[in-house]
Image (cartoon, rainbow, N blue to C red):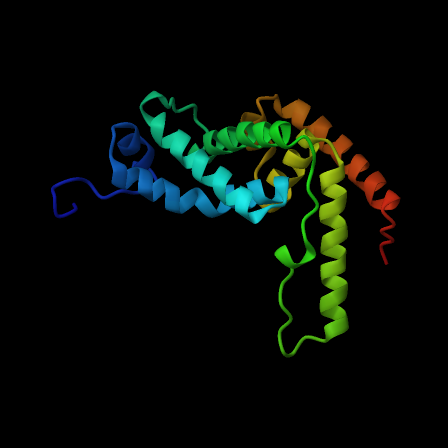
Length: 191
């Protein structure tokens, strides 16, 4: 029990407490999910400042609608990803174009022990991969990021994207083919 007589907030009870209006429970959910949601948004749009803004809007919107949240047997994060997806779609519509990510926004700085050429090669490959991902359709980008960045299952991705698990498997196959074709077009030659 906490000092004020309430139950301790845990993974199991946080959503229920937040739905009941407990701001500490929502804060718990925020802390647990904010990095994942930010990363998802950043990889979809490529701008750290816009990703920060959209991330804050995701949680503002979630906080405002917690009383109407309905548990559907999937992780709470699925609801947050759905909100993020909708806000990203609005962002793309409002901006009417896709931005390229400046190389310095996502490069890891080299460690003293790293060989400079290995570090440069790794980051060039990352830059090419991000360029390739941004060239495929939005739903395919979303699937690739949820699968590889967040390591979500097909069932979880299906819930987030509002599709059947079979549709996700089919989209996944098409997404990998499209990504390979884009990578070939931009000149990526695997070793």
